[in-house]
Image (cartoon, rainbow, N blue to C red):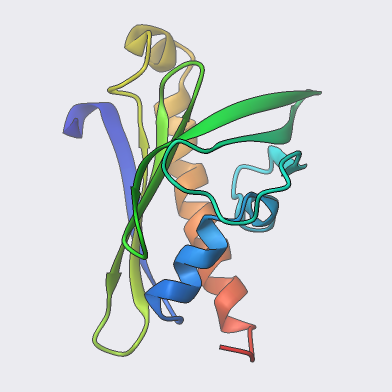
Length: 148
């Protein structure tokens, strides 16, 4: 997997249960999305679990919808989803000594239906920047929350 994924890690100033609650709520994905592509959620469910499907409204030049399925799930520790193309976005959470959470986000195309397509389109390089931007937004979101 290491040669078919890009990831980044940040320490988020919130406990794992709070961070996980945000990540499993598809209505919050547009708030933390660092790519600028996720515009909102078309799904009513607020707490995703393994096997749940959710749809987001996105925009890259033109608007489109993406249906995703939660493919990995461990309460307060791990959540990952994939869409029809098979690549995944994964969040791994570990408690930090200061009461926060060490979050690693990965874009993993090892499960893609066509790893060559992903690489040819330049998604690994672009998503590496997007993963970093998403984690920066996640940190900023919790830095400005007074109700933790």
